[in-house]
Length: 327
Image (cartoon, rainbow, N blue to C red; front, side, top):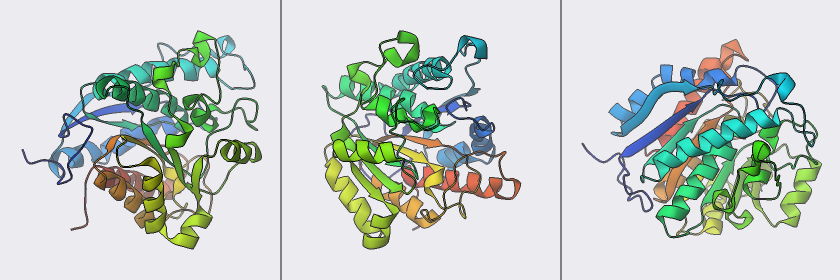
């Protein structure tokens, strides 16, 4: 088999192998439908394209995991510190963290198809733990492409929806001792605020702006993209991380303008074009440092006319991150 990419993958011992986890979970927010995204992405031929067109050896258990066996009943999962469904999200992300870790510790690229963005608590923690073990304590960098910063703490969140909090838990800015409410997150699961970069922000809560400023977190809003162009912004983002760091790309489809991705739970006008989204993914792939990716917040049920378009967009972004090129 030919190699899936001409780019040398620095931090993957099995760069031809792709571990796929399909996560049908929507409990980090209130709108149903996002749990149907993995099935829709796979039904549209995404995994076949990765296997047949890009040459990956795809490891997928043929299941969309909905974790019903571990999700507590609603009356057993009251709000805690203002968080909605905290025990459900904690249980699911803990299980998911282990699933991602199992693939990542073998040196495979890990692709997670969500689901809402709360699942990143599981995916990034699993990747971070595996990288530390495989690479002698090395830290993981995160590129978070999103209209939203998702760095609210439970106390700053206006909604209580946990899909707006994953970065706070992953960086240790939000902590909880209780094992059933994210107390399972240990030091080996976390990422440094210095290795976190945002691209595409345009709908950031007041409390989040304060958190970003106080912690010196590198963030590129749509204003920066308008000012510098996507090429320069991606250059600056990658320069901030440095060229010796494994990267986890967490891509919320709502980073793109609703013109390209209308079927998502919290669309915000004035976002990235499809080409800009693909360009980010292409450039991150070309570093040779990308080890994992999340594709989240595609909601096929929300907008009939745009569901197909949004699914096509999600597939395009994933293919670009895995080495698909225009020429």
